[in-house]
Structure formats: C-alpha cells, structure tokens
Length: 103
Image (cartoon, rainbow, N blue to C red; front, side, top):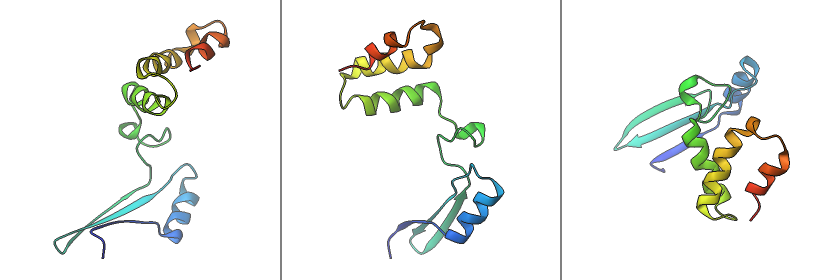
C-alpha cells in the first residue's frame, strides 16, 4: 500500500457539490508507520470561493503566473507582466497589456 494516497469518493464528492456547487472537495490519507492521518478539505488552495486563508495572495499569484509564463517569456518579463495584470485597471488600452505578454 502506498504511504500517501489522495482519495476521491464520488458519493462524498457529489454530496459536497450539492451542498456547495463551488466546492472541489479533496480527501487525503497518510500512513505514517501504521498510523493513519486523514484530512478532508471542501476547497483547495487558490480557490476564490473558499475561506480567505485558502485564497492566493498577490505574491503567490505573481509567482504562479511567472512560473507558467517563464516557459515562453524571460522570468523578469513574466514577473513584470504579472504585476501589471494585477493592476490592469490603470491601463487605458488593452494593447498595452498585450505587449507585456508577447515573447
């Protein structure tokens, strides 16, 4: 048996969705030397609908965006683009933002 497993119980998942359609429930079990630890979370980290403590901070969003965008952009340009996108209301024209995400 693996030492750690992520369990998706379809019945439990469906019940959770009926109670809160925005939830994305996950349950994890860890077997540590024969002792089982279980945890169930109705909302995942980064959820905009879950509790405040599960929401990503601006720094986390910038890091995540930069990590993904750095596959096609230099890392500094990706970080600059992420920071600018968080403040997109300051731009008068969308083309200014588009220029930030071009390779």
